[in-house]
Image (cartoon, rainbow, N blue to C red):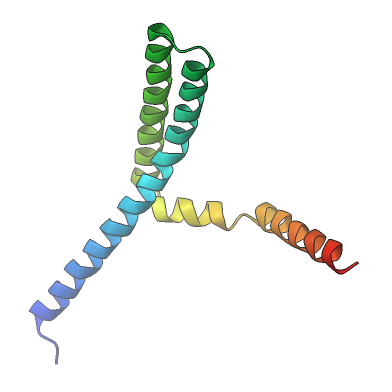
Length: 111
């Protein structure tokens, strides 16, 4: 019914899509520590701009980048970045916090 070539091309397409989604999740994981490093580095530099503080700010930002890369690569080699992201997004504690915030805003507008 199906040719062997058809199933092989479907597997290749699936692998490509999986690679793209894993890569996007990898970038999202890297972005978190990087953004934190950039914010801290920016605060260090802009509080009193000087060459020394610029170097320290860049170093802190690079540390955030390296930590993000190591963390994302560890998750990729483990169960996968997609599974890690889904577990993070599906945390029940965060859902409860969201529900409480929405109910508070609904109660305050209707009274």
